[in-house]
Image (tube, rainbow, N blue to C red; front, side, top):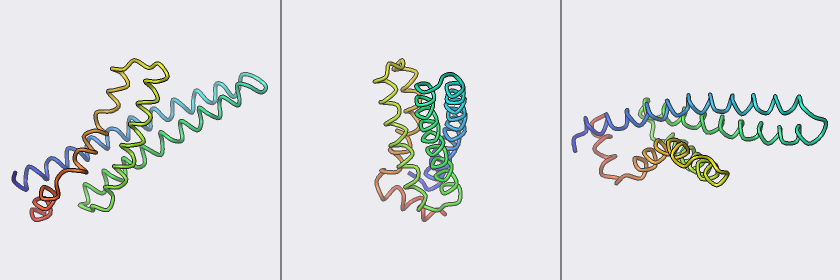
Amino acid sequence: MTGDSSGRGMTLVAVLALAQAILAVLRSLRWFEIGSDLMERGILLLPVIAMFAYARGALVFLIALLYGLFAFGEFAGRGGFRICGIIAAVLNLVLVVGAIVEGEAALRALLWAIVPIIILWQAFSPPERRAVKARAA
């Protein structure tokens, strides 16, 4: 494998992570909207449930932030941000599994698992592949 194709692969992974971050921000805004709707309806029980919606929205926003940091690190050639991608991918996969357990359609939930799987595959690829990329830079 040449350094050029490895660099393009990392750029593709960074673009996918950035797209996942944007979609996650939109998803987190939806969770905050759900929480706000629940907060306005009820005296005790629904506002408590609303706090769980806010917490889920905050978690999804954190994942989006981690994806964004990972993408920035990949574009800037800083390997130290790779851990952000790994953490985001693992948290994202945990949310996907949770969504399936809660009754979400498996195909729809698994669509959210594609980018995390690609990021984890790239992050844990053999070290000689990363060395080729470093020499090309």
